[in-house]
Image (cartoon, rainbow, N blue to C red; front, side, top):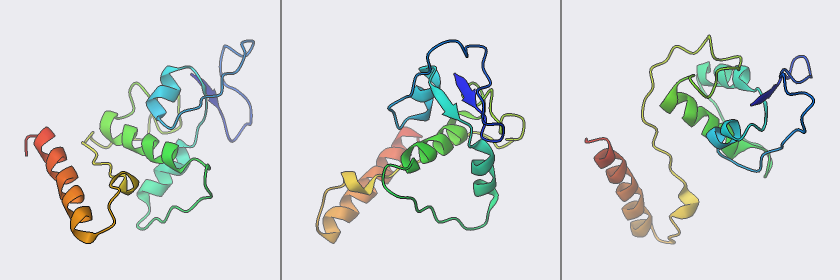
Length: 132
């Protein structure tokens, strides 16, 4: 992984002579595993998670999915190995926990009963996977 520091504006990697690979993924783990450039936004994510209320609104194609996947990875895996070279690595002390991720666009129903059935089905599937 090449880490790009927002504060300093320069790459912090020993691979600076190599070509920079820009990832085309919305999965944080894939981004890190592929050795792509990552602009470290973990300080902002840390502050966002410590705030009482949060509303996330950004234009289309502006990184919302990747940011939420980054947060999901942080909660499910903790800081090692994915956040090893980031701002949050020495500051995150929360225990790992399972994350239920709901994508309402995938439900594809137009009536309340269909939506409720899919919603409840997703929650039941998540609970069954955890043995609850």
